[in-house]
Length: 166
Image 1 (cartoon, rainbow, N blue to C red):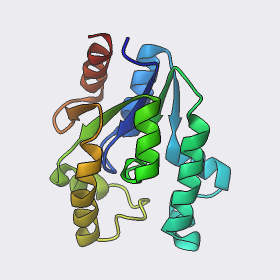
Image 2: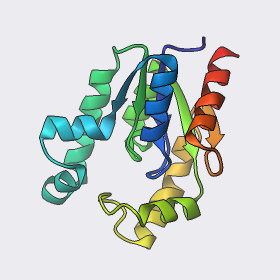
Image 3: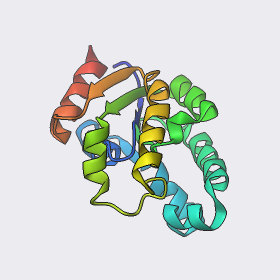
């Protein structure tokens, strides 16, 4: 096996949490979701944190959560859409485990985000387009890139497990 820890990275709406849960069951590993851990620590939603404290505060908490997760092994981590875009987080994550980019098209992201109004950075089309474009280069430094546009969760899990054992 290539690693004992996997970080799922990608844009909001890529399916990181769903894949993390399914992959955790498949490997019998622990699953952590960075956004959920932030909400638990702060005792409020990500949207509320952004609204009341701003993005800089959120990113500071996010870096702290990433640091707290580093010692854990046999763990799947679903990162937030911006976690891997932070150079400090990205460097720590790449050193700590395998990174899998769930790459989805902007069109699919927009389709998925219309169903979810809880994402604070999905304010408008221009913001989403800009974030998407700016984060692609960061995501590209992941160890494995999977085209998640047409694959179902179980198919993505199969691709990851095959890659782990090759």
